[in-house]
Image (cartoon, rainbow, N blue to C red; front, side, top):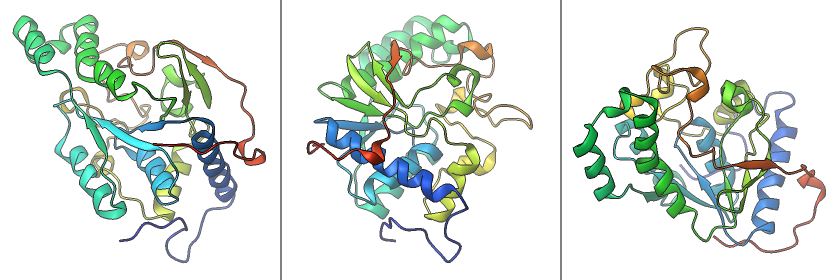
Length: 260
């Protein structure tokens, strides 16, 4: 299937969604124009597949990478091939340092993250945060698929932030999107999604740290389910960010050409 920037089929877009998509596309164009190098950090889940399509189908100058922690579901890894087949794009993969993983396992055990929040966060630091830092080295801005609706830890999420820990810009273009809007977009543009979503996994991380959610639970309840709700972040998005006033990107003309 060739990439398409227009809705598939005759149904078109739900009422009101077209304007939101237009604003998303304008924002992505503006991000690419304002920063020399921009990358999308993709978990290969629904929101990031939406952004992947919005970027690749329109040729936006934003690179895409994923963190291959070594403990992902086979279904998640399979999405890399789905992107390759549809868009002819190779998602860049970053792996944890083998020596750091070996040292952790030798000292604490393969699944020590179940034992305490500290050991779980250390595992996340090794398998996710350190590779993310390498992925973002030399980057002017990064993009995520985070949404305010996803969990109690993200209710104050801003569309544009400053990542103080890395001293770069950070964008969350889907911050105000609802789950229903995300899935309406995916259906309208016939975007491939992780098969685990259909099995009750709205949020997907490492296999041993993710379970299906129960009726009535928030979308991230299946992540590190043995922990308190207010500790459920891996550290990727907790480097110290400050909000930046949002400017309507659809009213701004690009001022520079972005490069991957």
